[in-house]
Image 1 (tube, helix red, strand yellow):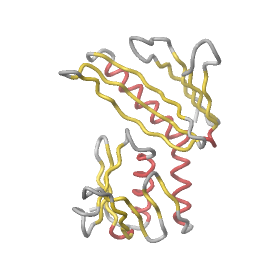
Image 2 (image 1 turned 120 degrees about the vertical axis):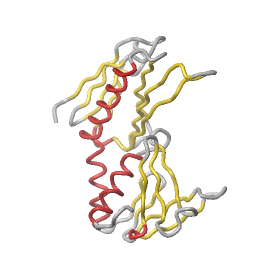
Image 3 (image 1 turned 30 degrees about the vertical axis):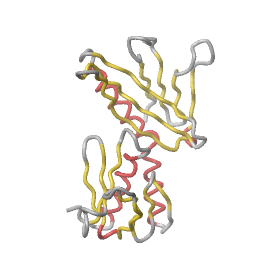
Length: 210
């Protein structure tokens, strides 16, 4: 995939044009104090997680939105890419920009991370994506159906999911009311990878998501 370059202007109080550069080897973003070396760089093999979404700005009514994409490396350093629109100005332009960045991040970095998890599962390895533990036989989730979170195991043949605009939900086919958990694309790390990995595993196991 060809390198991608985007220009980010954060908002009214910070309209400096910052460069976001994506290529097969690294991510570079002009996010620091302009008096110093302004670029923060993550090498591809350093990238671990991301989350993304929209924060709505409101007082008595909604007056703007902030698009947020956060990327974390294995040292827990976070690269935050954000930009704001007020009263609908440049709304369509920024919505398109956010989607183009997310598509490029997936194609250049996170698709490979998802593929690695899928390969590990097929080898019978155990691992975690966010708060979900994967085993050869199924998933362990922290069910939030009650006031207190409880660890629940769901065998693969009972795993089901639902997709929504802002979150992804996992549940047990046999007891969806009591065994379920939701994962926010904005607040939880790697929800998009979690969604992709589980969807692919169920397809390969020929388990219908009814």
